[in-house]
Every structure is written in structure tokens, then in C-alpha cells.
Length: 195
Image (cartoon, rainbow, N blue to C red; front, side, top):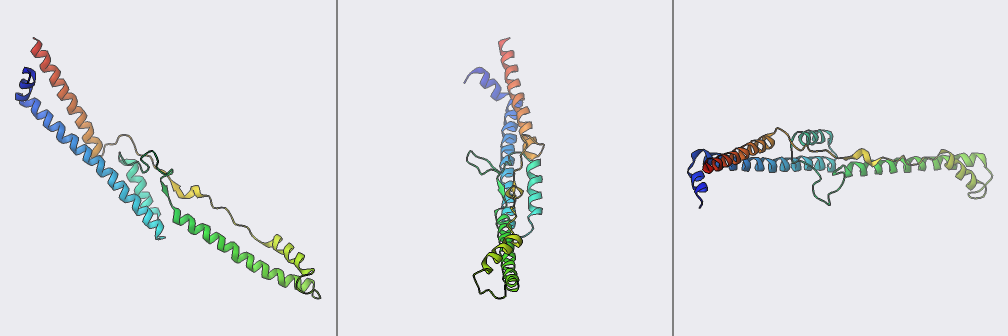
């Protein structure tokens, strides 16, 4: 061991700074991990509410607020992540199915009305013949089509800040300051040795 390392190891201030630095850095890293775990739990609540067809707005708002106020909470991490990361798949599928059902029910009613209308228009015609063009025309004029449901209304992406003053950010900032103090102390001791 060099004389500088021995002197630094016996210097109580340097040892204390190094110990505090490692403690604060570990606490900061654990807080970062906790931020990510909490985000995953909140995201799962959104997915669960979507799957169970319950209130999605409240867990979605909680997730958004948490992500916007904590670091390391990006909901789509990794190179092959789904974009946008939060998709209310089940709600969208239920709306599309409801729209298809509405159109089918309405068009069934319109077709029944067309048959009755064309029977009154052509009372002497048997099924087929001149009634078919009449029914087709009535259905094309009065039938409904599906209204497209934009899927972008059910997809969300929230951005996590690079730095916040939550527990993780504060601990990492303090660790950076302590690291600079340790390096400064080391430089100071090297300077004293050179004298």
C-alpha cells in the first residue's frame, strides 16, 4: 500500500466521507429501483382496471402523476418495448364490439322495415322479382355503417424526468457531492504530500 493510501486510510475525515458516500449511493440506487417497481405496480392497476371494465381514469391519473414526479419510471424501457407503452386494449375492443353490434342491430331493423315498405310498394310481387331491387335500395339509403373508433384515444405514453428531487434524486445528488468531496480530499492529500 502506498504512503498516500495509508495516510488516507488513517485520516478519519476521508474514511467517514467514503463510508457516507457508499451508504448514500446505495440508498439512492435502492430508491431508483423502488421508483421503477412502484411504477410497474401502478401500471398493472391500470391494466387490471381495463381488463375488469372498471374505472380506468383514477389509476391512469395516479400513474401519470407518479411518472411525472419520479425518476427511473419510464413505462417503456428496453429496445423492443411496445410504443406507446400503455394501451387500453380491452376498453378499445369493447367499444369496437359495441359499435359492430349497434350497426348489426340497426341494419337488421332497417332490413325488416325495407321488406315491409317494399311489400306495400309492390303488393302483387312475390318475394324476389321487383322487391329485391326495392329492398336493396331502401337498405343502401337507410342502413348505417360503422363509425371508426380512433385507437389513439386509448393509447398513452408518459415521460419520466431525468432528475427529480424525490428520495432517489436527492440521494444521488448528495452522493455526487460526497464523491466530489472524496476526490477533492484525495487531491488535497496529494498536494500536501508533494510539499
